[in-house]
Image (cartoon, rainbow, N blue to C red; front, side, top):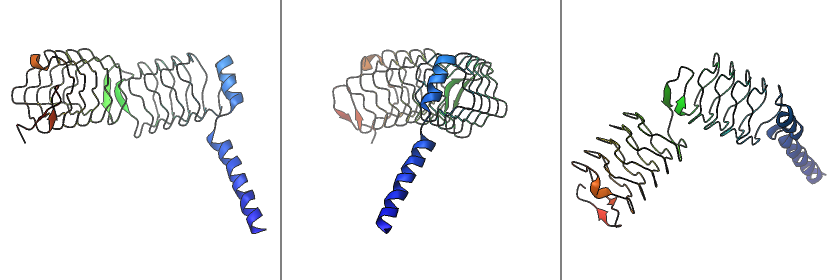
Length: 258
């Protein structure tokens, strides 16, 4: 009897979990067909790359949903639950995010120009290379952010902390990155041609296959950096750069400054 009751409890718990941790298929179809889904249950749903401009999602539950690359221009997201949602590279221009819960959400590369954020909760939100309502770029809480394949041509990243950020294949050509912190960052196959990285801390970063043509690495910390198959290192300025357990393009380890 006890065994049967335990099984029954497990079944009930599973049903409760499905109801509370999954989105409503009916609500999802309603959103896609009408763009009007206030108070809808869309938690853990994937809305990747959808065009939801002018959509009504007020009070909707979008907890932990995938909204990356979604167009939400002029959308109503007031009082929506968006905690831990992926909004990376989303277009949120002119959107209404009043009192929206964005705690822990990823807004890296998102465009929030002219968006209404009054009363929005942004605790622990990733705002990395994010266009804010006033048009300024934010680099708040960037650690571990996804900036893969981002276009950062001539970007001013001086003194920014981009530790462990994924910048693989990013275009950082001519970027101004004096004293930037790139500890453990992924820069594989990135374009760093003619970038200014003077006094940068790049310890433990992955620069395999990176374009270093004309890159200024003067006095930068390259300890533990992997530069195997990096291109045009001979054209880079390495005056005063720290080399310790640094993998060079030919695969050999440079310990000249250990």
